[in-house]
Amino acid sequence: MDILEKPNYQGAKDKAAEVLEKFNIPGTIVPVEEIAQREGLSIQYFSSDTDMSRKVSGFFDPKTNTIYINTDDPPARQSFTIAHELGHFELKHPPDKYGVLPRFASPIDKDPIEQEANCFAANLLVPQDRLLKTMERYNLTKQDTSLLADLFGVSLEVIRYRLRWI
Image (cartoon, rainbow, N blue to C red; front, side):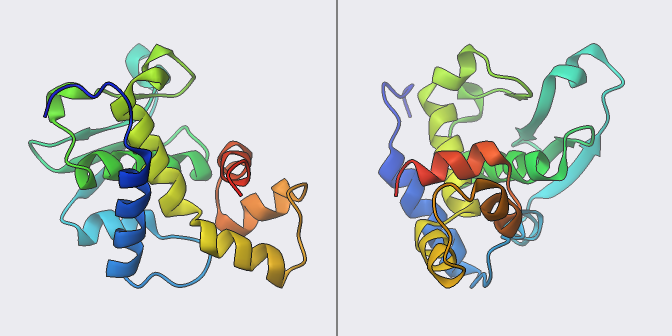
């Protein structure tokens, strides 16, 4: 695979839906750690005891099929990081084309491979059909971001991103 010129958002969305269907995940909170493990990946946690790890939320090592997650991040961020790294695996991104997931916004955010992994993660954690059904069930609007984030176990940033597309 060559370096992507632009992200394949539809492919990332479709793959997220395929994974959810494959594992028949009910409810609003998606158990991303369990999904990763059922896909044959292991999860290892590290803390910010080095300068690099203070800047890194996580990364995927394809040689060992291991996702590494920073324990200093909040649980919602850890879930997103697992989903993002699972996205690299599911989307079959070439290992030499992606790096670590930074804890803070950086130029890597503009990389099409990273954008695909972010799209996969957002759609895995907050599928559009479940978001709409949840909003209808609880009579919620796009302004109910905190409640929706809690219901889906994601950050406000993720729920705001998902709400932009409905």
